Length: 262
Length: 308
Image (cartoon, rainbow over all chains, first blue to last red):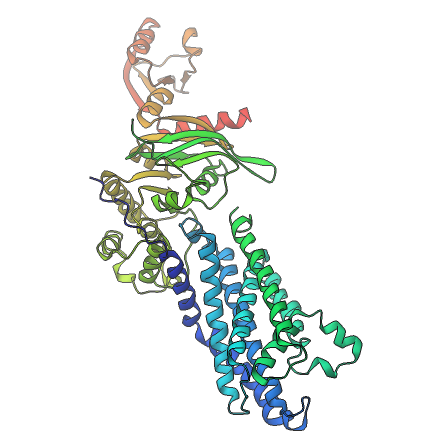
């Protein structure tokens, strides 16, 4: 008798296992994946909350610390959601152990969901800790808490998709770091984390509207402070559309790219 | 007639304009140990990657126990276990964690008795809680075998499983492969150690330059394609070979006392003896040596190179 009779198949288990593996991966190196980004955000908070912040005022009725905290929280969410999936998936491709997944019945949708959810959990965990630390410097009114949560989730989802795209397109570490250094970082810094777009000269203010991060940061700030450069519905719609576009792009790569399955 | 464990029809795959696998077809019966041999770059790993799902099929079809590995990929992947040629491990985790993860990827709930059996049989127990990066090369190979078997596949693919491993692991591996084969698992293996293929495989296919150049039962391959080397020791030296022996590639040594000839495996030795006696040679002794798979393999792949 064949002792290797096929064992019962549990269809959700491949997704759950991949998610569990991805979460345990970033927890295993928590000093890099969770502690370091929190220290970086804390330094920003110290500089802009406790030192320079007291001499700067950009938004009437709010301290500079209150203004900058939503952007710093979102920076943590964005950077870590992106980094989690980009580094994990790229390393799997680079070291070749991606074949361990390709030979299994993990479906493309389970693949995307597991990597995305793990990235979102890391991004949101960092964002949460940054917010907790920020309470030492300023209290936020939390004007629309559900909208804030929605924007944070959208931000982490969107950058998880971008991480998948970068990890599949990058051929080496240099190419991967270019996504962070030449795309994400400039977009964040020019997207209104440290200043409101409304104080810029008209041309620069208009150009800032081409920066997708502006909508994300402005919408999140509106949800937390109740004040933004744009109506929330505009920010939310633009971010949702961007998230859908990147999701479709990432899904196409996972399903069809010869860089993943030759 | 039973459904083949693996049925490959007109399988091709092109990389950068050249055919890595060129229109190959073969079937593997359930319970068989099937060897796929060929020199480096013959297309074995490309074929295995298509069977396992790592690579897309260029053209042709692959069926695993009757299921198409494109339209029913989820079913076929559950039936196949692959041990890759390269060491592929996730350095973040321990052997124990990685084995549990791998079962989960296949949608299989942890079967602790089976996992424990793999751990015991492959000698992984002392290293179970070490992270992969701290394991020796041999231990990583052992782990990869356990990983390929953790979901109890019906078809196990071993791509050069003994490349660069010590004798002990080779014995452990082959004993275990025979054991699980006797319990019903079909095996497809590639190896560079041809004596292993000779001992292990029921049938052997040889690939060269992407093409299948031979497919026979191992015994038939050795019988039909094998040659024998015959050494004839003479009682008294001779100065030159009789004329009719020259046509048989016979070589006389410098001392004129030993004659070396090559015969096909199915040519009766009696014919040769008669021939030598008729030629008046004073025979003192005869030694024969059968050519193994290695010689056959070299002959065939050399011929294949000329063809292409």
